Image 1 (cartoon, helix red, strand yellow):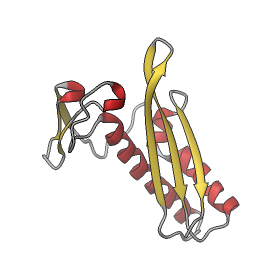
Image 2: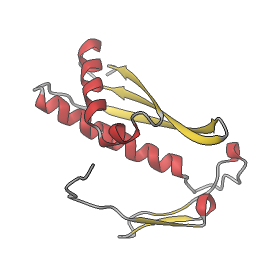
Image 3: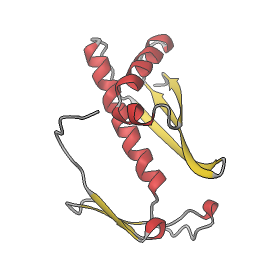
Length: 143
């Protein structure tokens, strides 16, 4: 599949999981450290690829959710998406799994779940990961 590229983000990593990640505009310039749970040092003040992926997926999914809501003329305010990205063994290899918890205050549960399901179909991160990793959705409507 070929896309019409509207924007390209560039980041460079050096040193693997115990190095540094820097975006081309230097807005992101972060030290990386393997978490203690994975046998690393878990250096305070550092991040890891799973946290970066979680932040990107959560932001993208919330954007897709708000797009779907606008297209359906269903006003929503204050939606949040929390992404938990887990790293673990996948047979002989390693893999990731994602749990997305989406909160849309003020909607009925059924309506909220419908919007989340539709957002999962259009979100570029969801589309990119579909069939490759487990992505579990939880929808809440707490104020």
